[in-house]
Image (cartoon, rainbow, N blue to C red):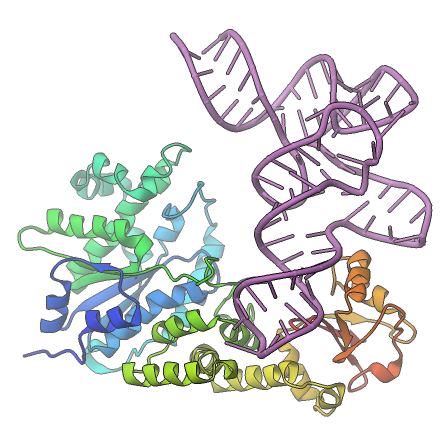
Length: 428
RNA sequence: GGGGAGAUACCAGAGCGGUCAAAUGGGGCAGACUGUAAAUCUGCUGUUUCGGCUACGUAGGUUCGAAUCCUACUCUCCCCA
């Protein structure tokens, strides 16, 4: 049976800016046979965030190119804790949290990959399954014997921690992850491990294990994506509220959409290649179009639309778009008031809110401070002095007092500080 | 084990008896300008019922008065062994 990939994966990843390094021979391997490759996910939280999208996208491309993707959730590795990039020892997660996180992440991973497309269907595996019955003595004899401490210490993830100290648990992490690769190679013929560039060290321990344990001609391959950066040097994937999650409960579709809308021109050009599957010529046309009229934010809109739809579906995208148009368009209090209660609520789904008993006669300063919209009354006063506070899209001053006629649909009031900070007050 | 330096607001970092809610820079927020961008400029950046109140590692003390002086404690860093 001959195999021809749909496209050259490495080449594809390179122009998209998704290629950092790979092991010699990886490209040849991908061109000549159907390769099973995997990426591991760390169950540190009960949702994946957009930082995890890059490894997911690696799997997506792997599958699109005709290869077989495995998504590994780290039921076992999560119990140990990856020291890569960490300055201090991590606290261990308890088992309930871990299991909860695993099942949440599992669901999210499922939406990106095709699990029913014949021989290159995706598969989900949990490394806890092969570690749970592996006893310690067996492990140090069968696995530990093949990797020297000197080798392990040379890894950046370990070296960086030598001064401040690290537990044996975290030190052994790379062996555990390395064994995953060996196991998948051995059991499922998985020949490739992918991940972020910070995973290079861990991945190589895996290929090393395969080489030493697997016998002659045993070889594992690796491929990493670069760390995603922002043009201004700040960390990618954070918004004001912290991480940008894929879970709609943690980051609403509106906030998610806004995150992408707010990327700078320079970043948008790079991100559209990374986070969408649009082809090369289509993307370069879009970039040209965007450069012709940058103020239209064409790239940002396309990027935000694509990724929001991918993660939250058409419905999620539509709500995010409507909300954005109302909040950032020429949103006047009239257009706010014209919304039905249902639309109003779905639009403000991602906006912080607070309930209040009485509106009539309440001063704006008390409202801002007491509802938690602003941190304190002092801050409210400051904001008002700056003329940055709006009620239902109209600027107000310090002496403003609410009355029931300010309520939208008889129960809501929209507070804003500047353009981007929004808050909903609900009358009980 | 011996010697030295230090701990200040989100971070860095000045202040060394009153004029200190604490210089300056960064960050953050807002305003102007814009494209929900970047750059730039401006303002704000403990809290308050605007009387105060709480703050300069922790606990005491000296003093009319302390971030500043003294004592003890905790922690951090550096040098020597």
